[in-house]
Amino acid sequence: MFYYLLSFISGIFLSLQVGINGQLRKTVGSPVLSSFISFFIGALCLGSIFCIGVLNNTDTVSFQSVKNIRWWMLTDGVLGAFYIFSTIFVSPKIGFGNMFCLVICGQLLLSILIDHFGLLGNEIHSINLFRIFGVILLISGVYLIQKK
Image (cartoon, rainbow, N blue to C red; front, side, top):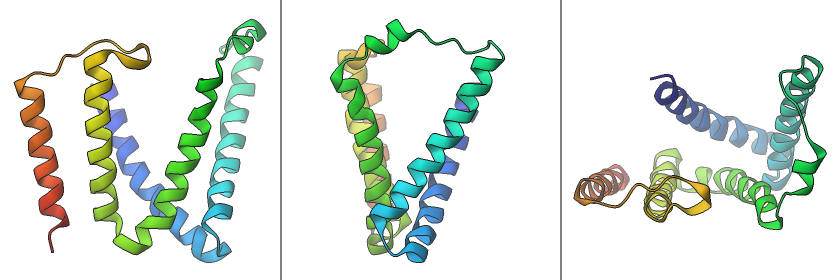
């Protein structure tokens, strides 16, 4: 239950973050600068939490594990930056509801494929009629929300 609640709260915070980033963009005048500020503050926050964990021996780091990072794993930061930038850039143009509907559609379609094929080291959850019907219902809901 904890993981479901955490996922739900994460979604709430994501919507809040886009709104805050939109105000930050208005203040600084640039979607790129506001994205940078967002990532910089996030990096400081995570760096502080990591350092506290290392000092308290609750988080250990192995330089060997850092050496094993593959190049494609570093694209994660690029993908995150693209997401933050695109939400800051797009939400004032098409609105939060439309933007998040399209974001959710993209997430649903790719996540079903990632689950089905067990990509990126994830456990396989095969596509079945229930999952297909669920995706159709969710995408239909997205369509209805976007209708004016």
